[in-house]
Image 1 (cartoon, rainbow, N blue to C red):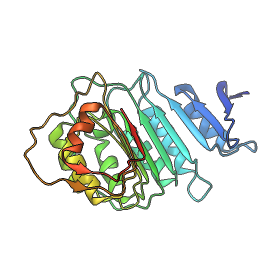
Image 2: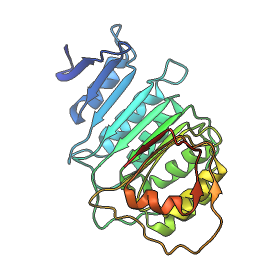
Image 3: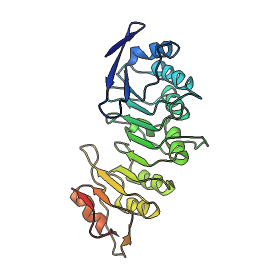
Image 4: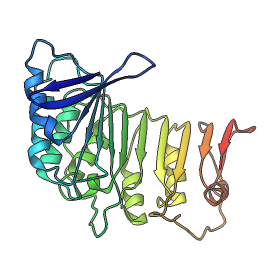
Length: 270
């Protein structure tokens, strides 16, 4: 079904499982979204998907921010997808405001994806604020969220949310930044973890030792090579909670030099 509001087109796709309502937005739809919110026909979507472009900027992100601010005290959008492969290529105050408004609205799942950005400077030097959050799933596949403006959202979210599923890939972080980030995290409810192969294996094993992660995926692509380390002989640690491991063969081999898992191991994917 296609719905037109204020000259803008909203594509409504019914998902076979669960009768979820999807709203797909583009740049031109952002202002119409504010009008739609005030109409009698307004129905809260369960999934909101925003597809960015090379023209996406603070104007669109601030319109989205206003929309999510208007949802305070109402039923939240359960899943928000920011698909930024086509743009923008830089973070901004508007993007930060949008991310903070999504989290404050009560959203439970946030997915942010984008292409590899060349020549960017990632950072972990964000300010951590106390906030209330319902995020259970956070999937970040873009270096945009580890840049100057947006990193404050990332570090705040990682310190204040009851995350059960965390995916951090295509981050642009260096191995040293990965080690610093993982050492600070305390996520007692985390069950599923996805990281890129640039995360050092000893750092990853240390994180598993402090948490109850059941499913682990270590991804690799053309932009991120596996972080190779020289392993010194040492006793292996036992990770009793892990029941699923999906990684490259060389990553699995390195991990098994540092840790033991339950035997027989339920699920191993190479």
